[in-house]
Image (tube, rainbow, N blue to C red; front, side, top):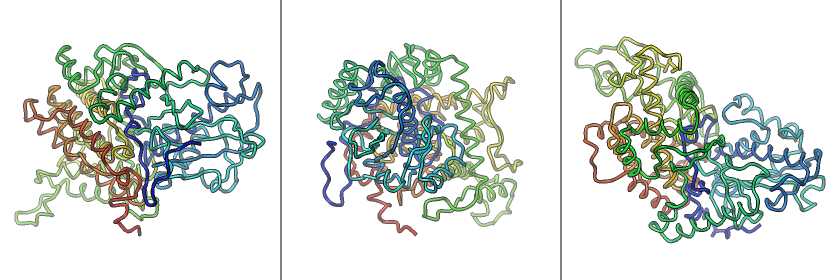
Length: 613
């Protein structure tokens, strides 16, 4: 296997600039929609947990097809570097899993090993139960077998068959994993039944390598790959596009931008959704400038423009159903985090704080301290003008503690940043009656400490329907900004640091809030720009490889920043010196220049200066 050279002692390699997540769109025709950017899954990481879990599930499905298919199936065999075994099932004697680069460096803390095995067992990130998640590794350790989906029990040794290889990076991306199935001869026979390499490029997005040569990857989005559907011509065409884009990226920032412009994934004219649906959208855009022009030409708000694009790809009822699912899952996650107590897993002994904070805030909700009382006694009482900030902090902490525990969250746009959008959405629904969205959950006379409401298509009365519309508008505007960032830079901490995760989430939340509060397209774009500009340079240096320190608190800080950015933008007229496009490109360049030890390897920053207790 040809790999990147082994780095000097003490160094952790990083991906080449051409490996940024914009290479996901190998056809140049992939629409990043609300379904792509807001995915329901399990924690603690979208790139290190959700993506690898999807990879395992895809591998099990493809292997099952291969073991029950004869060689006449077009596209299989030589073109894809796999062996077809003829009709009828064939036994799998062994599975091996290799985790490269950042997946190898922080995979244990991010539960990457467990995630791949959950996927191989056929479990889905959106529907898997927490009991299944927590029981898998002990079951495999006790039995020495993995129940491979659609195939059955396969011998598996957690110590020997799953390898963490942090100092080996495959050419396309720093987050890579290879899964191999071996037949009756095992590894000694030399030829596997099936070997696949996958790249987890952030936010749960996944690409599969169709090349038998790791040195010359042919990565294709997993959602576009159907076993047996790719011939040599298609693979070569994809490879040529990627090579062309990579050459542009190597030429420097301007060359990289030009290289992306022709073949970038994003909101473009011909689109394909994860479900395989394709068609033309009425309002294509690739940049913030094009988004503003499309809004001006159509007279639509950012949210309505994205809604029109979504509804060109799928029925309006499906769009609304997904938006309801996203919002309600976020609210449920806040509730679950507020109700939970104890110590987070992983060995750092980080205590959950949301429940205790909720109890204190609930007690203060009806307090009326006398004049002269100390400042702390006034905090978060009805007389405190900053009380909303305390509740926003609570919402963010609750979500990210759930994520750190490996429970269900919404990638927004990643799991490590999953608390920002729900926290700002909680601010909208609790404190913004001017948007028709406030549910009055946090009021001087209300002692409810959870977001005890949900949105539903059955909310047909004027007030509930208006609230639901405000929540949908928030998420759609956030989708526009998230799509721009992923298209033109990255949302992966392993590529650009935390500026791409929490920074992107803050920009998305700021745009969503500005939209829901009635902002013009220019104000929405300005809100996103402010939040991202003041997130530039954020490093991803999780202590012990766990999504806990500094991740949990950082989400709370970013949520408050998003609210401030939206309010600043709304007080202006939309005119500003720095464009969203400029700050996204700056973020991309900063990420390329950032040392790999600050990009989700736990080899620098807080990860080496905080003592693990």
